[in-house]
Image 1 (spheres, one colour):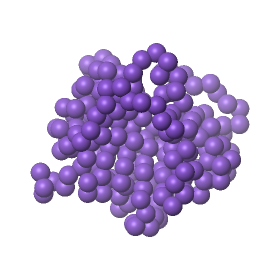
Image 2: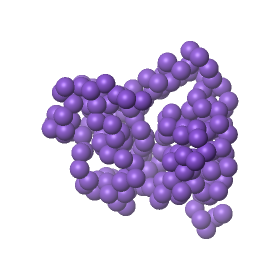
Image 3: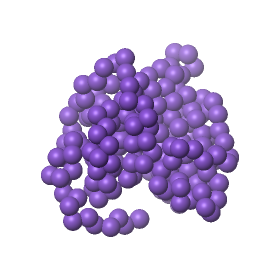
Length: 205
């Protein structure tokens, strides 16, 4: 979907609010509980979590400049020192994380790429999941939330192929205080699906 252009959404203004706009390896306390959201949109979900859990660390990744500007504004307004915002594509995450491992990765309403010829672009496709696996601590989790039934069904197989174990799933997720802007809107027209998959170290598989 084409995003509305925001006049003030310049790289300089986004960076001035503390958002990372060029690759730089993060220096993070390994003992911190870390949650990563890939495709954070305007940030309602991740900023709510960061605000409610100040002792934990949160990382938001959003590549679309105008949307990331809104996310950066939320972080700046709420003074969320425990939230790191990265404006970049998820394929470059390794340039920021380095050796950092996270506890959870949230994939909230990622592009479902419905045409079969485009399935390899899905963030839950096995090749992508194997990349994300490198960023997870042992027994770390990936949580998929979507309103797209075909993506949800296909993702069970994707996670299995990538060496994850699905530990819970819900075909009609109840509303909560932690929802994206998109989820709030889509709940008016249909169910929301959620799947939680856990990473097991290859030696234990």
